[in-house]
Image 1: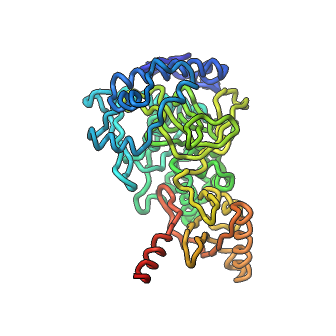
Image 2: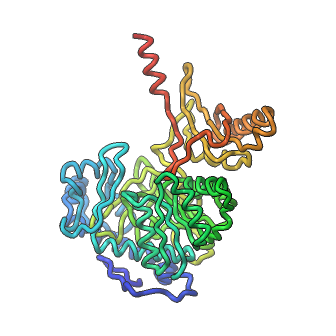
Length: 474
């Protein structure tokens, strides 16, 4: 396999022939069984490395009664206990700042990134200099698979801070030999300026979150700029579900006239795009198993589910040396298949991408609901204004689901009957999709704030209801 060693050793000057569909033809098109045999050997190597260098893994595996030398197949690897984000936070509290799963000397840490810590202790990502270069190699390889080539302009409209997605896109574009435009996002007024720059520079590709792309289209039109004037050929996304949801993907494609590609996994699994990235002729996400080995597992047993079944991804680095993740439990929801693809690559695929988080699931009157299911219903409606909120409330004894959605200006221009018709149609569509009744509130366009980064659309006020009831009862 081309340049496949551990630790990785890549030729930094290597580029395929520009006419080649593949960066590494052998690695990308080999028979799945041959690749799985090679992956099983690599898993044993990575586990030995972590066992020797990380007290976190040595203790965890000793307690589970498993040793790296016990792993001879992918089935053996399923016995390795999963790692949770809570364990990573505890490890960093115990051995600050990078945790006792850091496998390189502290002096070799080259980049520090991390989570925002909005739901608990922030997690620090310590990335070694060698890993930083490997990330560039892997991202370039996947971006090549998307159809990008040296000299293309890549416009990166994502926050350059702790967030890893923007940095991965930048490193990959640099290694690929593209012209990089690290525009960023998040500053007031920046979106209007982005529209102006896109109109003048006319880049080949654009990277952001899906919700930001839709926000950009609205702002551009308000500035009198047609997003088709950007002349984008390719838009690729991560950071939140959306680009694999047909309605959202269609809205982005229609707004910009560009091909849409969905990417993403977890920040801890940087390089994110190498875990799940679409390619030039197929839909969904492709699992580049020789870079990050992905299992789609039962959320309870953490054993692989058969192809064609739904589960949660469990990720393992095969080329990371600084903080390798070995069976990291994602908590996301997807399903996978293994079938021939038009592009000739022989990796498994996620046909619908990552379409929700198990943690995001909420239960209304006994039905499990995922926000992405509501997103899909709304985005199929041509009168949907582009933003919404999902409100879980309890006015009386039963939980209630309220969807507050924007309607397009022409809906309001047609009068109250038109607004009422949109409400009834959406309630019926949601009932058919979710299996429960949802109350829909239609509000004018721009009534709901947009975001320059990840959309947060679910509001659960049941705790407020309960607290008010307790005050009344006391």
